[in-house]
Image (tube, rainbow over all chains, first blue to last red; front, side, top):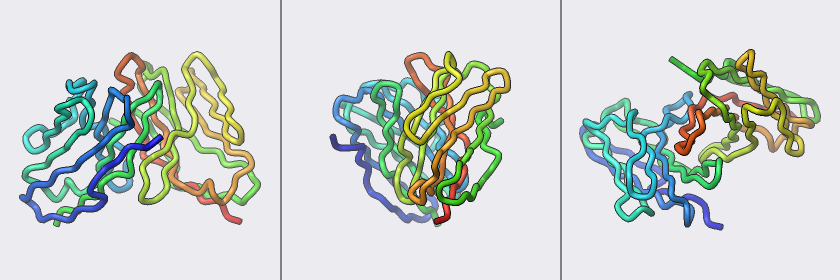
Length: 111
Length: 113
């Protein structure tokens, strides 16, 4: 069974630029999550989708972050404009049963 | 306010000995707890979980203990192996259909040969 796929793996941008991350969950998983993991911290939930609907986006900085999952499968997370404090690993996960399966993450560096 | 706390940033043990990783939580609504293991440049991988109706769950070399009155859980690895060296995250969920996870900051375990 293929795992959660994410791209790109690494991204370096300058502040005020925009960036987008892509996630393909495990086939058949209806629930998809985006997490932000800042160095030295645990993953923090940004947004949760159930199929193509948003379940929880209470911790998503909506002035600069947006996410979509139009067809209920792949998802994209966008940051526009990026700030220095957005430097982090962005993890995508999908849920099967009680377990969340994580992708390898995208490491974003904002200069 | 951190609801899940892992107060030891790092732990070093000898191969073959027991590793004990600790986790405390403050939210009494948490009813499902998980441990994830993370290697560098990889995403976290699920290790073991426990429901609040139990006080112990065992899977091979890994055992998780839950003390609800103390709001404390621990992960025991016996015997520890060099391949266990990784960051271990404790996570908790309030259950329901959302399964929203709140993570601790992680503990770096180093198992020395």
